[in-house]
Length: 211
Image 1: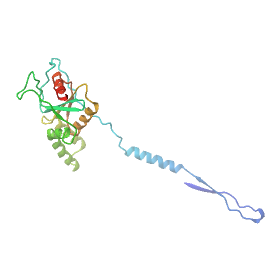
Image 2: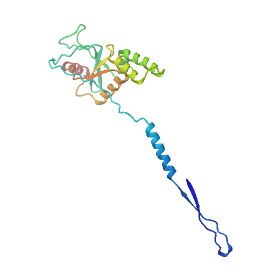
Image 3: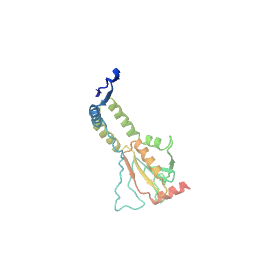
Image 4: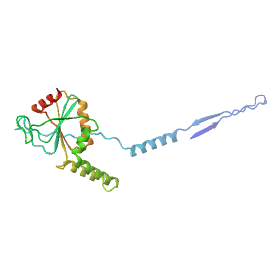
């Protein structure tokens, strides 16, 4: 609160009247109180940012596994990264030495364009994305609680129809491509992401493609 303190100024020198001098003193106590009230208000009403962390699934290695064999994989895509290249194959891996019903596995190449990885994942994981779209509508209509929404979304991702993704890299793969791929998997709502070691025969296929 501002206070004005008046000081005596008029003199009697030779009958001349002098203007009264005044001094101003500002009391800052109310301002400090207001600042603390505002600070307390914003601290209590603000939402602090939470660290954004994506959980990755690291499968346990069976003790009796043969180096060129891997467990049966259903409804899955395996991405292989090398340099600036992104290769993938669907389903079970079959090397040239043990071809499957349709022959050995053939790698396909993709990229981060609009018709690349994102479209591929959206098409293959349509079951989860459609389920999430329905949950989003219910959330918007306030028909679901946050905890129920998250639980149901996790159930969609765990369903056998949900897409699973394995990520493998060679020694020439770039960190940027790996991070970009993980981001795309997050956007596509992939529930099971497993970074695993690349097989020797898979590495040979990658080298043939890179040439």
